[in-house]
Image 1 (cartoon, rainbow, N blue to C red):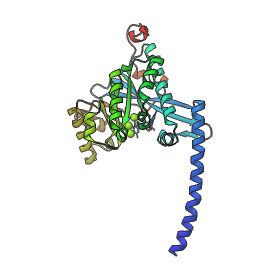
Image 2 (cartoon, rainbow, N blue to C red):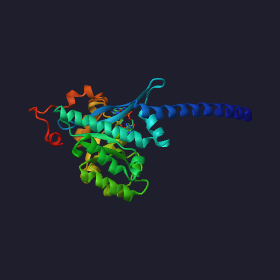
Image 3 (tube, rainbow, N blue to C red):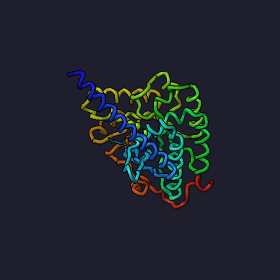
Image 4 (cartoon, rainbow, N blue to C red):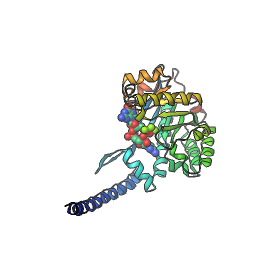
Length: 289
Ligand code: C2E
Ligand code: MG
Ligand code: MG
Ligand code: MG
C-alpha cells in the first residue's frame, strides 16, 4: 500500500512541479517585461522618532502591478529578481526613483531627514555599486545627507573586506547606512564591530507580541543595549500596537516604523509626515545645484 501511494505521490509531485515551473517562467517573463515597461512604483513608509513622534524619514518599498497577474509582493519577486539577474537594474531604478522623489519634496519646501532604500546583497557585491550610487545622486541632485541605504547581514557572506571598504566610501559621501532585519541573518558580532553603519533595524519577527512574548522581549532589549553600546541608533520595524511602542520607548529604542503610525503610502498621501519649511525659500542645497 505504501508503495502504491508512493507512486501516486510521485506522479502528483512531478505534475505539480511542472505546473510550478511554468508559473515561475511566466513570472520571470513578466518581470523582465515590467522592467522594460517600468511597471514598478514606490510606496513610502514613514519612520518616526519614538520620543516625540516627529516624522523622521521614509523607507521606499517597491511595488509591482501586472495587468494579467495582479499585484505581486516584493517578498516574492525580489528573490526572483536576484535569482535571474534582474536585481541590479531593478535596484538602480528604485534608487533613482526614490532620489527623484526626495528632490521633488525638497523643491516643494517639504522637509524630511532621509529616504531609505533597500539594497540587495547582490548589488553590493558588484564593484561598481559605489560609483553608481554617486552618479545617481549627481544626476538627480539629491544631497547625500538625505539618503540612507538598508543592507542586510548577508552582504557580509562574500568578501567582507571589500564590502566594508565600499560601505565606508558610501558613509564618507554622507549616506547613512542601516542593517535591515537585524538578527535574522548571518550575524557576527565581529563584523558588527567593523561595519561602518549608523543604525540597526530590529526585525519585525522580534517585535511581534512584545511585551507578551518573553523571548522577543529579551531579544529586543538586548539589541537596543548592544546597538547603543556601539553608538548606533535603533529602529524597530513592524510596530503595530501601542503596547509595543510603549515597551520600545521605555527601553530606549530611537525610531519606529509600522502600521501603528502608517502603512506604506503613495507620495501624494504623505503630507502629514512632510513638514513644510516656514519661509518659502528653497533649501540651499537645491538652490546651489
Ligand atoms: P523590509 O525591508 O524589511 O521591509 C519591511 C516590510 O514590512 C515591508 O513589506 C513593509 O510593508 C512591512 N511592514 C511595515 N510595517 C509593518 C507592520 O506594522 N506590520 C507588518 N506585518 N508589516 C509591516 P514589503 O513592502 O512587502 O516588502 C517586503 C520586503 O521586500 C522588504 O522587507 C525588503 O526585503 C524587500 N523589498 C521591498 N522593496 C525593495 C526594494 O526596493 N529593493 C529590495 N532589494 N528589496 C525590497
Ligand atoms: Mg528595509
Ligand atoms: Mg526590514
Ligand atoms: Mg523585515
